[in-house]
Length: 232
Image 1 (cartoon, rainbow, N blue to C red):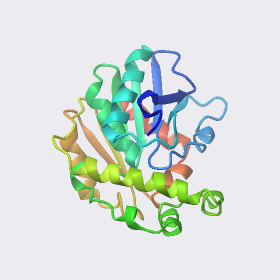
Image 2 (cartoon, rainbow, N blue to C red):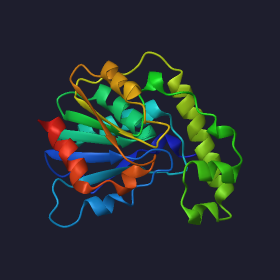
Image 3 (cartoon, rainbow, N blue to C red):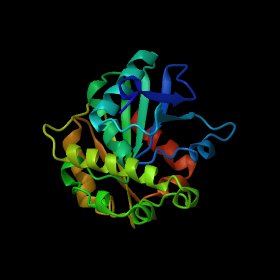
Image 4 (cartoon, helix red, strand yellow):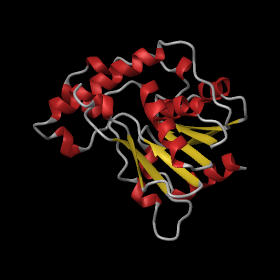
């Protein structure tokens, strides 16, 4: 796809010190809710990582490499990655490429790669696919829905290809795995416990009420508590 070679993550606000907490969204790239986590006086600031060309569809390992490169070049020495859904897999890929800069990872609403089934969603019609991923109403009702659906299908195909790949990435940082009770991608704590296969450090599993998009209602202090925990 045109421009894909030059595309990369853009972190906002930009990393400007030793510490950084970076949120990586899943399919669809929704991050507007991060503003709510950053009300005045709340520290640390939660930064968002968005792909610079939203309609491009690089592979998960390419995204992880791009994110790791951005973090490595930033000079930050105390970084926590927070990934939702497919963004959790991007964080895992980035973590394997980072060393002492990475303090920990928080993965939300995502089973580890070997426990995630190949998704059939790419075969759904446009509107059914939009409803399944809980797309905002303004997208479901726009004439641009077919283009959005094309993007989503491409990402699901890339996700499926990633899930079938080998070997698996490994992190040296602790992982907090967060599941949601009504989310088919994360409700089973046995599956979440298998995130232990992807770190040489410790794993902690937490369950919260809600569905796949519960991250958008997550209290800021809850996320900051998890960040404090991986930082030690």
